[in-house]
Amino acid sequence: DTEVTQTPKHLVMGMTNKKSLKCEQHMGHRAMYWYKQKAKKPPELMFVYSYEKLSINESVPSRFSPECPNSSLLNLHLHALQPEDSALYLCASSQGLAGLNTGELFFGEGSRLTVL
Amino acid sequence: DAKTTQPTSMDCAEGRAANLPCNHSTISGNEYVYWYRQIHSQGPQYIIHGLKNNETNEMASLIITEDRKSSTLILPHATLRDTAVYYCIDRGSTLGRLYFGRGTQLTVWP
Image (cartoon, rainbow over all chains, first blue to last red; front, top):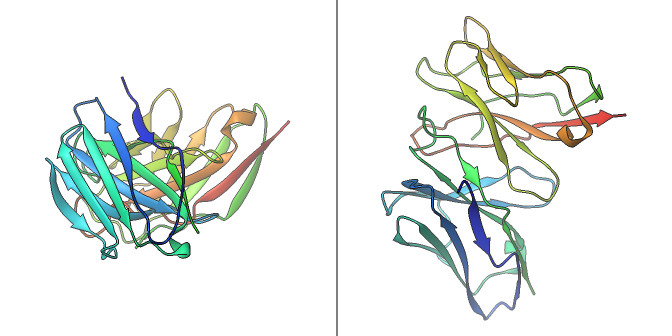
């Protein structure tokens, strides 16, 4: 299994809603990532987990709250988002941290979020 | 921030080799160069990576100059399905930080 599975594929939410994005991998990878991608822009790094611990937070607003319940799962909890947060949210995993010889990232297909 | 520079767009005829250049003049001696691509509306896909030697896999070849300041990704026989944005990346200041630049939009035409 070389897949990273993200759910839901599409999500529409209001600014007062609370929702979560989910990501799952069964490759035994110990690093997991959240990226955000706006239309016609490159992916932007948000968070990095290594061995289920948050190791990098790229100064992301607190309305985005990541969680890594176990080595296979990564969640992104969303609360009080703004319309400008509408984007494609990509999850990735890697055996070793990005930058190492084993650091190639496997990406999911993304969750497309629309905030009304 | 991304420290690589790539042409904004390139074209290639189907069946011909596509050679995508990348400058990474500030790369450190122990940093790998990674290549990914993103087909429209899909997640990025890993292609290949290298440190100082040339690398080849089933998808592509990677040629890294001796001074490591630039590299070229080669798709030996481009197909229409290779139309995508190709990203050349080196890692950020710490392990785990992989920053995507704007990449090269490769269009393969029949």
